[in-house]
Image (cartoon, rainbow over all chains, first blue to last red; front, side, top):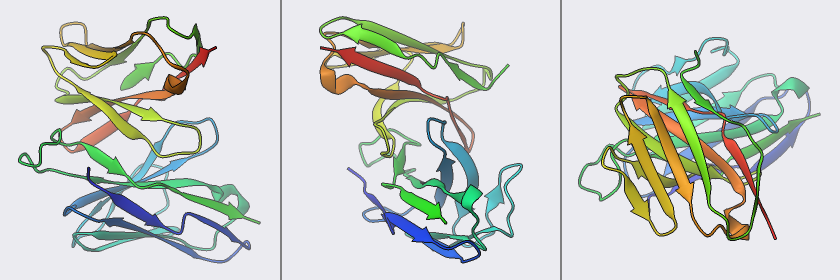
Length: 121
Length: 108
């Protein structure tokens, strides 16, 4: 099946530092990638939709200046948490959508990366 | 009304039993539907798509009722390894909406 990788898988940083998370689609092109955040025992919350070659679309309540998204190619999107604080500690998951109808996969299926666990001290 | 609603559970079910979850969605124009499974501290993984005609994959059966705007997931002969959170996912245009998930615990 389609594979999405994320790097790093976990990170611990000091308050005030910035953290970059990479999301890559390994065997398909993803014009659209999504960034989610999940706090313990909570549901996935969509943060933003990342479109290749254009600005990301942020969900209400998500600060675009704090969570910088860059989608420079069809296989890579990055999320940078700027000036991270302890309340930003969470599980960040990206996903990529395979729009191919010929791949044998359900249309509009999302493939998720393994997630990045961020802990801000 | 929430866009996608699920009973959060937990459902505590003995091994071998049959369990069913429902999920309701608010927008009748929703186009495609999925069930995902998420294990603790892991990413969600697609379990199955849901088609109007209903579809079955082994012990799992998914059904869609557009008139009543709900989808269902039936698990037969439940296994310990079925313990997870099951996420209902609805697609409308370019928007993918996740339910909060239903937690399932299979008891030995």
